[in-house]
Length: 577
Image (cartoon, rainbow, N blue to C red; front, side, top):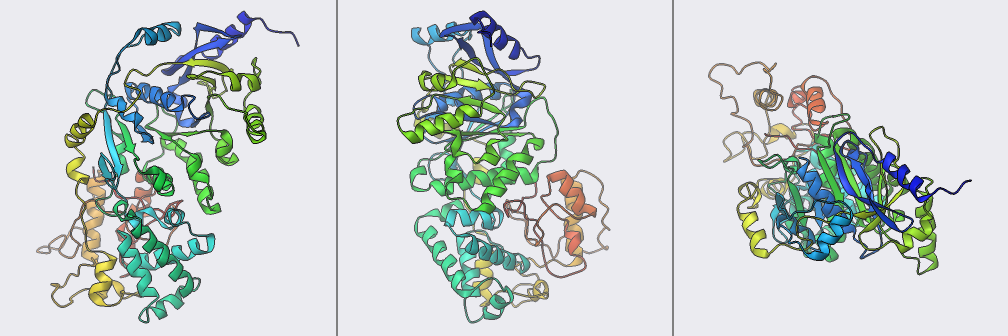
């Protein structure tokens, strides 16, 4: 095969990255050791929902790369989610200051650089750190993700799913850890013996193991992450008043002590988005780009059910307009089924100090298209701030492989000041909504108050007319009028159309028997496992990505509220916009 000249190689890259639509500018190509600013390397904005991988050894510039990409996405009006592992990404809220060295670099790649700030929302898991507290209810988190946090084996995971099933069927809301503990303690008590036997696959010994793991979580201080108000993942899709996408920056100051919780919580956010967002097809730009840093934490020791759920989510969330970029050290950190769906590749330098490193290097090279580079040499000699790139062009075909000197961020590459972060959090519109934890009546209170869990088909009516409860119990049993009223509200307020439900009888308070509206509540339990149902349930499945079944489905029974669980066993929330 004829050896191509440098000019031919540059021309190949120029042609491959000549794109018509809006793009994310990544940098300029390096060919045969020379930088060519007339050969820019770009990523089509419309292809960012084809997902991607940012990989490379420690210290090669991965964090700076996602920082730079987040800035341009925000400028293009695309919301971004970032997990701030080291605290460096908070610098997006502070304009960078230029220097001679910086200007020399940016001019060499043709970048018109200017210091800028970007709209940032600071988040913190359960309020652990500076930021708006992000919480999830146990019910919404679901048994598969919770099993991951508790490090349960597959048998124990299946047993936990039975516990959730029992709670769902008996109107026992699992809001926080004490609710789940109360249900398991009931099932393992003398009073719950019959219920435990009816669950079949759940043994008392396994329930005891789960209970002990649950108590361990509480001892580790993880109860702050579960509760209400639950974070509405629609908050991640916001844009600023000037049209730029909001960058949601999740602070993780205690990542090293709770790595499993961190990685699993990120998958909860994705799963909730997946369940609630409608199908969008091919868009000019994504609705959200999600950067999953330290991605290897997701997969280490993961059960088959968890891996299958991740694979399904990554495969299908693309059509909902969400792009996911996994950030990790080597591609081998990501399972093959997931890696095969990551079309956009930004590969920083790899090291080959050990036989295992050399094997990983060869495996990485084998995943790239044929190129004009000796990739084994290129990937071990690339400098900091340089990366080997190939992405999808606007037609969905891979672009030529290009060693690229990457653009410099325009905000601070490091943390913002504590004072700036604190003032940003204090001024956030989300603080009044999520800043204060609430403890609503749920499974713990129901079981403690009655001495036993309500069970069986009559559970829904057993609560009504109880002493001191005015006929409508805290458990929220719904009669037909209340179900119709809630169905009307969903159609009118969420779907935005006239209701097909009958109007209330004259003189009948529309919500007389409905439970108190509490903020924000997760969707409620079902024994279903997918998007199904007709009538308003089918309409909601289409409108909210399978998040709800209509309460009208309950008219023929008194089994109470149902909850549709998704691919991770999670439950989507109603959107109240």
